[in-house]
Amino acid sequence: MVIRELTGGIYFGQPKGIFSDSQGVRRGVNTMAYLETEIDRIARVGFETARKRRGQLCSVDKSNVLEVSQLWRERVTAIGQDYPDVTLSHMYVDNCAMQLVRNPRQFDVILTGNLFGDILSDEAAMLTGSIGMLPSASLGEPGKPGVFEPVHGSAPDIAGQDLANPIAQVLSLAMLLRYSLNQSQAAETIENAVSRVLDQGLRTGDIMSAGCRRVGCQEMGAAIVAAIN
Image 1: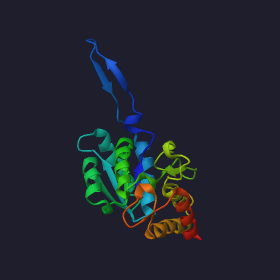
Image 2: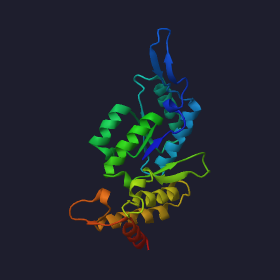
Image 3: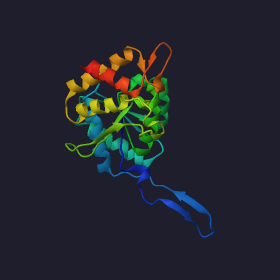
Image 4: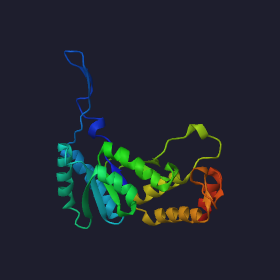
């Protein structure tokens, strides 16, 4: 699971823009900046999430060259002292990108900033073979509702054709149950149902492979419901 900070970092830092100097030469500027309070907030989300999984958190930064990452690593390490039951490690973002390809099973929860998370989450999505498999959530303050949705968009190009893969949407519900409502048993029931249907060889077009049976969105959804029941 990738925990990506969404409201800070280089996408929102100031100053930003395209500026011209006295000679008319243009310069593009974006500022990567984080307050320590922003880092502390997302770090706690990461540690709390790791507690509900395998208890391993890998914080990803570029602290060997970026001062903002040096503060990131310092604050994540400090917050980690409140979570002695979670194993914390640190990794540079370029190495993390390589390790996701080399051995993705080594990771449990990845915690990172906005830019790095944007890139790494898309890379991680393709480890499953399709973004149609990936649930996601945008979370606010603890105790307040988040937005749970597939990592992909609405795919208007295939609307009404019974082609979409519903698994990401179904697993987004499981994510809501597990991480916001603390209903881990209900979440596991849904996750196990999806696994059983895939084990039966049912596949939508985006994940179709030899020896499996291709189905549409409706049949895949009905099969998952049947497996839950």
